[in-house]
Structure formats: C-alpha cells, structure tokens
Amino acid sequence: MNHLLTMNDVSTDEINKLLDRAEEFQRNPSIDTLEEKSAALLFFEPSTRTKMSFEMACDKLQMKRLTFSPEQSSVTKGESLYDTIKTLESIGSDVIIVRHPEKNYFNAIKNLIDVPMINAGDGSGEHPTQSLLDLMTIRQEFNRFEHLNVAICGDIKHSRVARSNAIALDNLGANVTLVAKEEWQDHSLPFKYHTIDEAISGVDVLMLLRVQYERHEIKEGKEESYLQTYGLTKERERAMRKGSIIMHPAPVNRGIEIDSELVECERSRIFQQMTNGVAVREAIIEHCLK
Ligand code: CP
Image 1: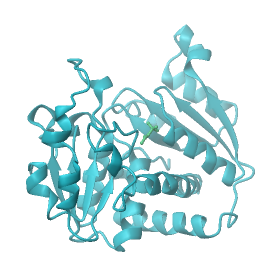
Image 2: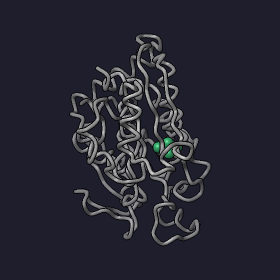
Image 3: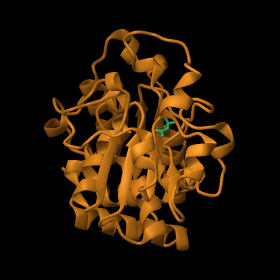
C-alpha cells in the first residue's frame, strides 16, 4: 500500500518528484483534480496548520472530505484506532490522514489497511508532510540540498519535525548539526551537537523547533531565559551569514525559541513554509492515490 508514514518511506528521487509536482500545483492550481476521491482526516491531537492545509489541499483537488472529531465519535465508547480506520475505509474513504499522540501508531495497522494512510504526526515520532514542505522551502531558496549546512535547534527529543528533517536532509546530502540543551538531546540521531553560537555563523538554514511543553514529563513554566541561552536573539540573527534563512514549523513560542520581532524578519521563511504546506499536501495525496 502506498502509505506515507516516515521519511524513510520516501527515496530522494521521490522527494524531488513530489517537490516538482507541488511546484506545478503552485504555478497552476487547477492542473489536475481528484474529483471522485474522498479523504478522511482523523486528528487525535490538536492542529491548525496541518489539518487546515490538508483540508485546503483536498478542496483544491476537488475531493470530498470527511472530518472526524474523536470526542464526538465512537472512540469515546472505546473503539480502537484500527476499527475506526477500517470503518472509514469501509464507508468509502480513498485516503486516510491521521495524527495521533502515540509514536509509531501505524506499525500495528499499516499492513491491514487497504487504502493509503498519511501520517500527519505520530507523537514524538515523525512528521513527514511537515518535512516535505520544509524541504520544498529549502529547495526554493537554494535550488539544492547537497552540502547545505542545516542546524536543527531546540527541543530535539520531543520533536517529530526534527527527526523527519534530520533523516531526509542527511539522505539528500545536507550537513546536519543539532543544537539542544542536554536534557533535550536525542542520541539515537547520528549527528553532532553544538551550541547555537557555534552553529550560527556557518549555517545556510537555521531550523528552530517549538519547545514542546505538552510533552515534558516535568512541567516547567515558560522559561524567559531560554531565549538568551538557546534561542534566536537579534544579536545571533545579526551573526548569521548573508543569504541564510530561518525556519520554524510553528506554532511559535514567541520570545522563547525566537525573538518575536524575528518571526517576520527578512530571513524568516516561517509563513512561506505554511504556504508551501498546501501544495505539498496536494502532491502527497495525489502520489498516495496513484
Ligand atoms: N507545524 C504543525 O504541525 O502545526 P500544527 O500542529 O498546527 O498542525
């Protein structure tokens, strides 16, 4: 089955083809449609960008869409994820888009589902559709991935975006560096850690991550001093080299991982990432339905 569950599912050739197709959708929004097809969107965790851009992508493809809300469904009566997905498949969904808090939720069910499943985020596991829109944003800027210096900075341990992007960028030939305070480092990823000050002057892409307070075992309040020690201050932004860009998957904790005024600065591609999310998701849905 043509699922998209992790960035390991996509070859570098397929990544570039998906990005080419997303760019075609951006240039010519009515290039192709999937009028007879329907998508089910199952979000068991909150989302603004991913859910809304999947909805927009379905609308642009003229697909029918079923929006599922767990709290008003038979999940509240104990129905399992597998039975929920089989139900949506049985009533005619051609593709199922799932965000779920459990890492690797798909492993137990992926071989039992007869329609493509797209992972819209699995706990702290992966976020492949975010990664593809990030890759589109980087390729638009530099027209290549090989030998680009990319620093992924922040709450690496709890970030599905960090994992998907580190895997994909490494496969595509970029030089990946990680920046995180010690308790948020994930040593299962085969990349070196540096401080943000060590990383900043050499980067082409500074990819910031949200501090994922909701995933922390010890609940601390928003730490204003985080910005000064680990985040992107105005002083650090001035130390970035000419032509380098700032990315962040959002939502942004303004004033924590990035100075609020930098969110919309000249180097920032944060809102461009969101724009790219629609066309990338059109390309992904089309790819999975082929
Ligand atoms: N970047 C991202 O996944 O945002 P949402 O949680 O709002 O979908």
